[in-house]
Image 1 (tube, one colour):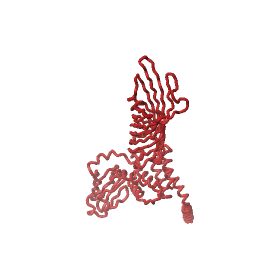
Image 2 (cartoon, one colour):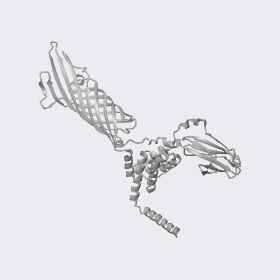
Image 3 (cartoon, rainbow, N blue to C red):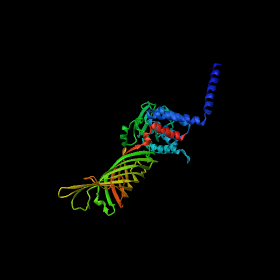
Image 4 (cartoon, rainbow, N blue to C red):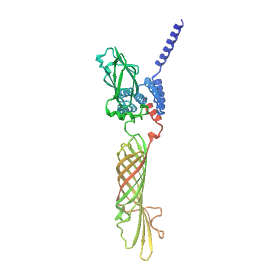
Amino acid sequence: MKLRVGLALFAFVTFTTLSASAQMSEGEKKAAARAAYMEGIALQDKGSPAEALGRFEAAQKLFDAPTHLLHIAECQALTGKLVEASETYETLIRKPLGKDAPDAFVQAQEQGKAELAQLRQRIPTMRVTVRPEPEALQNLQITVNDKQMPVELVGIARPVNPGGYKITAAATGWGTSAPVDVEVKEREPKNVELVLEQGATGGVVVVGPATAGNAGSAGTPPPYEQPKPKPAPGSPSPAGLLLGIRPGVFIPFGEVTKNRSFDEFGTAGPGVGLDVVGRLARLFLLGGTLELTTLGAPSAFKRDTLAEVSTHTIYAGVLAGIMPNVDRVTFVADAGVGLRYLSRTLTLSTPDGSSTKTDEKYNGLELAISAGLSIPAGPIRIVPKAGLAFGQFTDRDCVRDATSSTTLTGCAGDTTKIASASHTIVNLVVGLYYHVDFSKKAGSASASRFFTTASAL
């Protein structure tokens, strides 16, 4: 009677549990899968892949998703289950995805392909052979770790997980005297030859590498010490910020005003640019720049007296450009518009010791273009570039006799229009930019994975 009551109670509980599971809505299943997935991510990040594996497997049972399969395979590999991990990866990369599949699913498949290629190199093999030949034995049985190995696998190098194995063999009238311990390391092709003797006495086991070149495999760490495979290099993160400085040489050409060449104001000189540039939608650039330049001494200045000239320019503007892949060596180009200020201080000295000092200031719009290469070096991007700036000085802010403070033109708040002329400034620079990746700074790896999966489920 008690047995019947117990069986009835067990059946009732089982039926109730199954009914509750069957009654879960799709939304509830997805929410439960997401919760299990996030617990798995947290455990995997803390270095507990064995516990994380159970969470990912639970998430996969509730909702079939490539992102779940990817982490199941990773945790299997981290716990030494390399053969199981390879099969999970195979399932992942062969899973058909529709044309409207979420980006997270597509990225999981691509990452799975790259990680599987690395994993295959780690999987060892074990080839078991028997003497006498199996055809000469009756009722041959081979056990590996207390599990029977199909006789058809004798002589075949099959993939196995790294670790220790106990192997025995027995046949009618033949056998090994004791289990044989075999240690298989990652990447190692292991040959195991079992020599059976009649009466199961004096059995000999010969264990050795398949090739003499395997000696180096002995130093391979156990699977749980292996570094996690790095994801395949793919497209750059969606957004970032480039903060940089670009020293270089600036070479002016053309005229400052009509019939007054730039050579009367200054020649090639050093300068430096300060840039703040945002990176949007993976490849587009948008930002601002400030450029300070000290020009060299004029090479064409008409005078009958001794003269000293000091010329500086300041350029401030905005720019837009492209950088296809911030994480690799890539082409970079930009164009912008801004305002350039030119300031010249002229000191004239006469033989009798007197001198006059004049300040001149001009400003005008410029169109700037540049192109070069971006070379990543950790968080730094080295960007050698060449650029051109085209413009005209359309206003003269001030011409003042600095010695006597006498106003020659302007300087009273009203700008004086000048006879404008075109000029070009060539720049050769090497930029050093610190790259802030918003996708990495936005939160931890767990949070990033959460949003990826949340958008996919």
